[in-house]
Every structure is written in C-alpha cells, then in structure tokens.
Image (cartoon, rainbow, N blue to C red; front, side, top):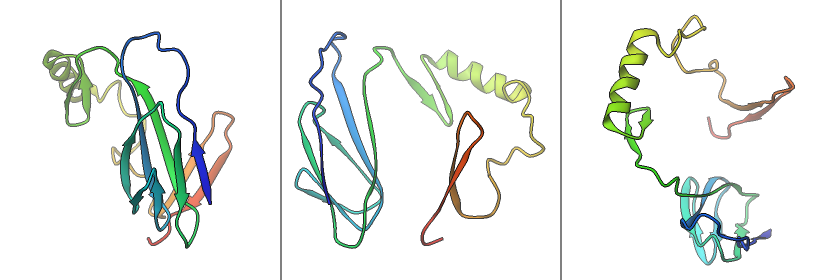
Length: 136
C-alpha cells in the first residue's frame, strides 16, 4: 500500500530549521521517496516536501514519524542524562546517586515489564493495549 506524508506548509515563526525523521520499525521493507529501507532503520526527509511511503510485498509497515525544530539551546548528554551544560550532567549524576531521583517506588531497579516479549501501551484512562513482538 502507498501513503503520501504531506509536507509541512505552516508558517515558520521560530526561524529554526524543521526536522523530520521516519523510523521504520516493522515490516519486510519500505520505500520512502525512492529509497528502499529494511527494518529497523531511520531516514531523515525534507519536512516541507510531500513524501511517498510504499510498503513492500509481504505485509504492512510500521513507521514512527518525529518532527520538530531545534530547541535553540546547548544540549549535553552523557549516558542516560541530558542537560544544558556539563554542570547539569554532574548534578544529575549526584541526584541519581543520592536517591535515584526521589526514590524509585518499585521493588527492583530493573527496567523490565516481565519476561513475555510484548509491546504495550497504557493510557491515562487505565486501558492497556498489547502487541506481540514477532520473532522473539
């Protein structure tokens, strides 16, 4: 199947460049603006241009589209921590080492949701959707 992602045609009030990234995460293959992708992969595209996405034979394609402008600030990253300066990163490490950002309320610090290979989405209203992960 084919889908055209419309280009952004709104006003630019920030003066900063607009970025659009497509993350192809599920399916056998996907053609994006003439480029053939195999999951998992990322492709940066022109946010102002219409882009054709064509799922390859063998099934649908799962695509995450992220778009935004630069925040206009310095960004510093080390490990899982992100801040605006080295001082921010050092403080984040100290905060984490002191009390794990306000004490972790769960019995384990493992970032897992059980042994079953499943993706899920839990919504504010308490409903939960589950999606099996193929191949695991």
